[in-house]
Length: 123
Image (cartoon, rainbow, N blue to C red):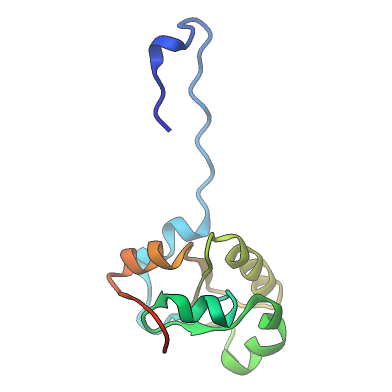
């Protein structure tokens, strides 16, 4: 959002505080090659466009199926969804389950751009 400073009172104005950095803002930069990209949206959302190389594990199935997909809790995992919200929920669940290197990658477009990968449709 752009502000027109002429509309703001000069005295007493303070810039808004810096927002805290979320995991998805720092995670992909140093992404280990063995990191699993995990799309926590529904299967139909995944098919409509996902990061190249990602796997689909919808959030409602996460706690039940993650132990089969990723039995090693030290494996790096980058989660993403359409807005980053479900990925954040998944991140909290996985950390409670003992997964050590989990991060929120944000949206498919954002993550694909940061990784230099394509957003694919279908399989």
